[in-house]
Amino acid sequence: MALEASKIPVEQAEIWTVSQLTRRVKGLIEDEIGTIWVGGEISNWRVSPAGHAYFTLKDENSQLSGVMFRGRLAGLRFEPESGLEVIVSGLVTVYEQRGQYQIICEEMQPKGVGALQLAFDKLKAKLEAEGLFDEEHKKPLPLLPRRIGIVTSPTGAAIRDILNVIERRFANVHVLLYPARVQGEEAAPEIVEGIETLDAYGVDVMIIGRGGGSLEDLWPFNEEAVVRAVFAAETPIISAVGHEIDYSLSDLAADVRAPTPSAAAELVVQEHEALVESVSRLQARLGRAMSSSIESFRNRLDVAKASYIFRRPEELIRQLRQRTDEGRMGLERAVHAQVDAERHRLNSALRAIALLSPVNQIQRAVESLGALRLRLLSGGSSSLGRKRAKFHPLVAQLDALSPLAILSRGYSAAWKMPGGELVHDAKQLKPKDKLKLKFGKGGASATVDKIEED
Image 1 (cartoon, one colour):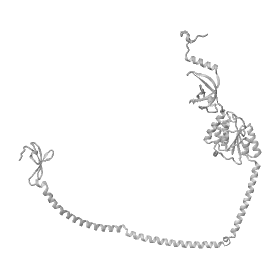
Image 2: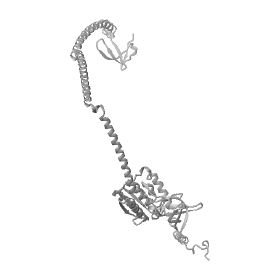
Image 3: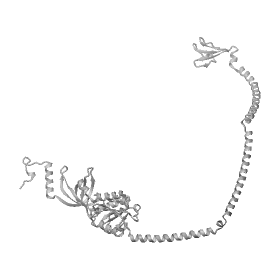
Image 4: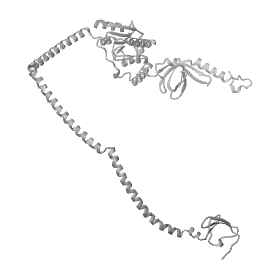
């Protein structure tokens, strides 16, 4: 019996590294548990730039880290997301770098709903939101197609049923078969290639489909690439996938959905006898309509022949000639009246132009200018005399009151510098003050040497 680790002296104990312990735990988990199925709810779903998915699988009490590598993730027929209940299968192991145990998923299925059904519902919702199933995009089928294109398996029951119906109903038609697998992973690319090839070739109508089967068997007609090819084709397409109870996304995108391949052939080719009978009915109706129309025109011709115009056509010509003469004379009178009116307007305009002639207007302006010049000279001389009579007394008064007149009689004025203060009293001065003197004519600067008071 091994001793407890705590009772073994450290000198005697085997000391492991963390990596050794983690690797031992990893080996024990892989050996004891290995690959299992485990169910839970996805949370923290994320996909790395490299294309690997990392998530947590949890229930009410616990959680488990999970990883699904790109190759396995690409094989899923549904898109996992957080909150989705799933069942996964994979190897339980330990991620050594973190010492965390995890499950490496090899398979994943939705819990409660099949993966194919979930993928069907999600893709249907996506394409329906884009408008691929809208009725406004549906094209009508041709009445009498000359070339019918078929994309299906060359060995299946569907092509035999289609050819039997076409041969029985209307053998005079050209059928082009594009062989394609209708089951398995390689089926969808071949179906897309067949649709694009026949559409480019220029068939009048196209049938795609196969016989019945499970949802997995019919899955190629639910692939997004196939549905988009059906929608993008210029040729009207009939989708006949499975039996009457089976529905595919190609049925929804096609212009017409047939419950079976045989029904698709019946839709695209009408019965020969029915067409002959329809043409005969139309021919009889056309004959009756033409006879009725001819009889109606014959009656109208008889009425026209019995009319006054056909009995005496020259009378109609005479009346038209008379009306023409009356119209011509009326037109001449109107033209003469219009000419007279325009002549009167022209004469009035000429008289107005003569009155408004620039030469006449300039002459009148020159005469008016001469009169105004005389008035201006007379008025200016008179006004100048009156102003001069008023001005002379004022000049005399101004000379009498002018300080210059006083200075001219021998007086002078003195200003104390530099302030320019007029000196009225000797007390304003002191020796060495600078003075500016003004006489009747001219002036001088002086310096005070002595103050003398009265």
